[in-house]
Length: 166
Image 1 (cartoon, one colour):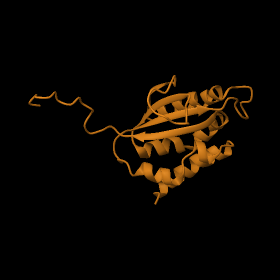
Image 2 (spheres, helix red, strand yellow):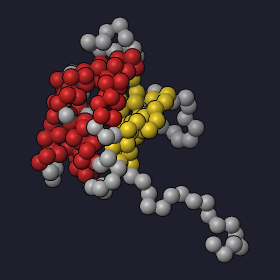
Image 3 (cartoon, rainbow, N blue to C red):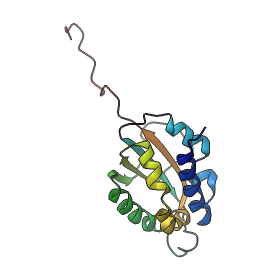
């Protein structure tokens, strides 16, 4: 069951995408995915891993631009918005090659954005102000995977060497 405040946030986010002409299946979360997100830790930061694939040519209102250029119009405003709300862009860059893995999916860009919490993520992206510039996201974005991650309690460490007392 989606908590009422989060259901409203999802509806606002989905409405912004749909108003901009977007398809829910590829670039916006399903209600079950929001429920799954909320099963994660309520306290502490969440890093959202954004895997982005752009349209070759952008849709309206950004005709004449590439999908990446149209998405860039959205991205610049979104990063300004999320950072004003306490989130931070950790890293963003283009995908050069697939080194390990075998999939038919491919992405053009990866971005890591840290939000103070899952609830804050939903509040920030669901704010009605996002709808004002989300039209550029929809115009340029073909597909997105958005993966919520939480820091491990134990950082990855190398295994103790054989024969050591550690």
